[in-house]
Image: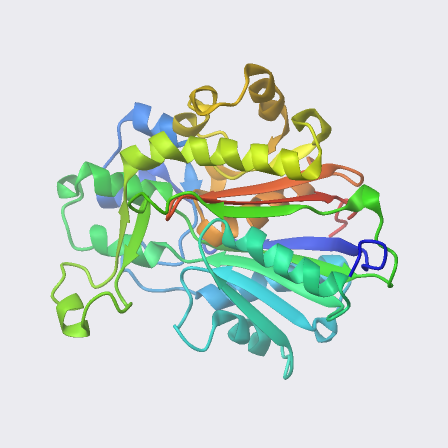
Length: 369
């Protein structure tokens, strides 16, 4: 369908959910040992929320429950009843179960007997990919009202690293992983307009790519898959584990970002100076931003980017699929994203060095509730 006959797709509202009280760095030091001050400064995370009790390891909620809570807030702010939703697209790398997909549990918790559900298995890039899937299905008239959700529960992988152990005997590289990640969910309500109502001024451009086909993964979550027989998996020190290539991500991650932003600018015809808000989780992390120039971003673009980045890494940590919608929600509710703004969503994922970007024109007024 040509752009002239596409339906205009609008963001009506966002929502967010963070489980439990925030855990600051002092709280983590008590359970897994401290990190040096310069390392803490490099990762920039001061607080995060976990669905796991850091003392007992008990689960206090679930991925689908967090996703539903974020969805309910977004629907309330949008003034949309759950019954009006005919499409749910959810991204997560930490579902409640391998099957049924977590999106069907969101459907159930919202009381929807019938609804189209699509799930993207990904980390940071997944929510942007989910957004574009929903956008296209609304633009062509297949559905009218969609929930796009990113939800992640990383803490269940982190707790076994330190539970029952002397905090000072936890390896420094394991501590770095524990301090980096948080849990949460973010949601967006999208609605398609009438046929022929799309217009060039709000044209949404999407791009995604994996740049790590010839590299080892920057992040690997092991366990529960089919890489080895189950009896062999059960012999591992931890049944499930998260492994980070910290030097590799620090070196190659900024190159993925720079390629992603250049790709999006080429496709959209925009200059960085045309963008009012760049939703870029981890965009201000020192270890990441310090390499922009080496990766090929001009000094002028670096200066421009520093003024438009919208992120909340300090308060929530690295949250995988939830990162972009949580940052988007924070930007909107804090007034950093306003009606008429040209917004670039850009997610970078270390797993196989992926990026996903989407440009859009923001329309939702400042939330009143």
